Amino acid sequence: MTENEKEFLQLHSKITKAKSLFRKKLKQPLMGISLEDAEKRLKRGAHLVEFRKIGFPEEELLGLFEDFCSVLKGFEFHEVAEVETLKAAVEAGELNLGSLVKEVFSGDPDFLSSLGEHLGVSVDLLTYLGTNLGNPFFEMYAGELEGKVDLTDWLQGHCPLCGSEAAFARLRRDDGKRILWCQFCGTEWGYPRIKCPFCATENQKSLKYIFTEGESRYRVYLCDECKRYMKTIDEREIPEAEKPDLSFENQKTLYLDILAEKDGYRRQKLQETARV
Ligand SMILES: [Zn+2]
Ligand SMILES: [Zn+2]
Image (cartoon, rainbow, N blue to C red; front, side, top):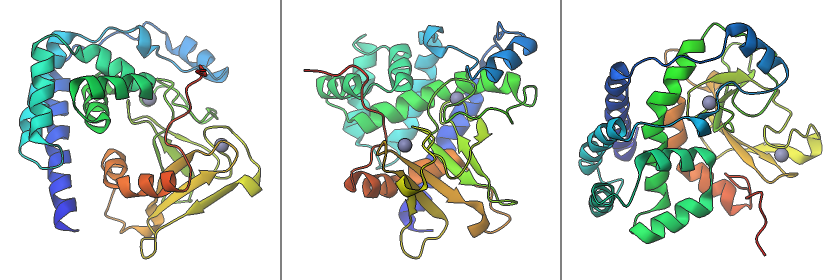
């Protein structure tokens, strides 16, 4: 592990710890959906929770945000000045944290880039914070259903719980099956390897994967029909004792995003509303 990776792992552990302490303080919400209805929804391909309709308590988010800021200041990954700027914007009421979580979750790149420009902070930092601030809430809902609903028949590329697109994948150690992962609620579900999770094409000619030399554990699956890509870790290529943390792997492999984007593939979908 390089020095940079070690430092990155430390940052990740501290942020993860802050999130898990925070989650313990949250009251478990009621899903408002019976297990029977949940199964029915899943059968017809509908995800379970409408997070866009759920309010995120600003006061509680503020506490977690402050914890994150203290952690981030100890690392050089993000400019300390940027963190200070964000803190000031939140204190001045210019930035609502609940809205940030929702915007990051909705995946509207235009909103984030104009907000970043307005505040003078990078979209990467906004995305990082929005995702991590939302995690304890999303995971709490996911935890309530974990092991109770059967996801084997869920054949969609988006998350059965929150409806978000898969953010990363792993090839399972035992059988090489592709398992998709949601960065918001941490839910995992199986998906065919020769099928695009974004446009569902099964045309083999349009699907391929690339990897960087000397690094067989990572693959980037590419789709030439929708020009999207999926970063993937192959568990069969890592020591048995190592259980990959996909949130960490996702952040650690930003160079793979750059590689795919350089070749014309996109991380995010294009906005549905075309602008003239
Ligand atoms: Zn999810
Ligand atoms: Zn596709």
